[in-house]
Image 1: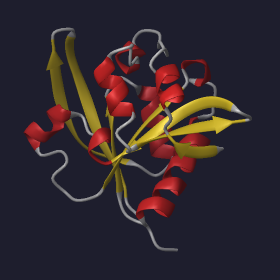
Image 2 (image 1 turned 180 degrees about the horizontal axis):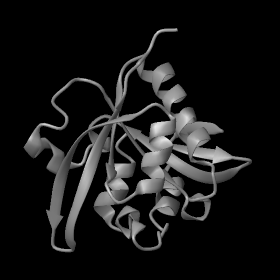
Image 3 (image 1 turned 90 degrees about the horizontal axis):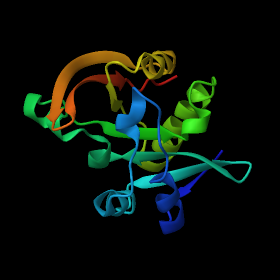
Image 4 (image 1 turned 135 degrees about the vertical axis):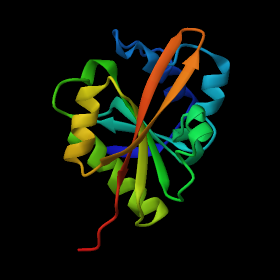
Length: 161
C-alpha cells in the first residue's frame, strides 16, 4: 500500500463515495467544507496497484466533535480516522488496511497510544479494530438533524517489544 499526502483530485474522488445503509453516515458528499477538511494537511490517501482504496486522517480531524462534550479526547494520544472505498468494505481487507495506517502513524508521529471513534452499530469495523489491538474505552452520542448516533471510543496502547 502506498500512503501519500492528499491531493485535490483524490479529495474530490473520495467525496463521491457513497456507502450503503446503515453506513451512509460515512458518505462525504460534495460539500465544499468537507473538501477543505480533506485538504487541511491531516489527511493522506491510500492506493494499492494504482487504485485509490482509502484514506487516513490524524489528530483533531479524526475526532467527532460531540466527543468533546464528554471529554472523550481529554487524554493525550494520537487520534486516527480512516475510510475504505465502499467497494472494498466487508471483503476482509480491513485488518491489513488498519495495520498500514498504524505503521504510517508510528513512522510519522512516533510510537504512541492511538485512539479512534467508530459508530457503535458498525460491528464489522469494531471487530477489525479489536483484532488490531484496540479496546473499548467509552461511548458518546452525536445528535444532528438526521438523527442520533452513538460512537464508541477505542484505544490501542503502544507496546514496546
